Length: 222
Image (cartoon, rainbow, N blue to C red):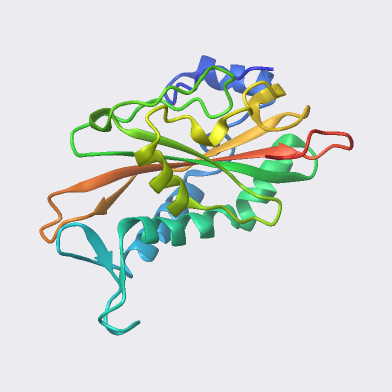
């Protein structure tokens, strides 16, 4: 089973997703739920203040002044919350009609003035990376215990010109999510993260969670 390339504005694409056993966050969840997720993201990002034009620092009232987190650290906190979001899991279970588990998270970020690149999170098509000016895509497996390693993924990505390191050997599996059952995809709205003292430089970030239905005899998750 191969999912079509999602078209956020196209009803035909949404119908095709549902026919194939896939769904997107906006197709099922009410707009207020999406707004709630975005507000939570902004709340989490608000705990960091940009410093020195290349990172984000936790405010003095919540940590020592010397404790500094780069933007990767800020992303790690937020996406860790998103992966463990109970409501998302319940939504996925309703769409899939059975128990589900998150199997990967995709992160897309782009510099200012770059148009968001369409995501095809469960396509079996090779995932060729784009240049930094067009945005960068990272596809990160989620382990059985819910852990994942965004910082390591980002560092590896900068050294790996193929930009496919994290899904090597995994594209041949049905649905691209490690098993024979259908997958469900949750796409989070784009966010802006300031990375400079004057907020003039920022990253636009999109998070995509993929859930799969656990079935006896399935290939283990990567």
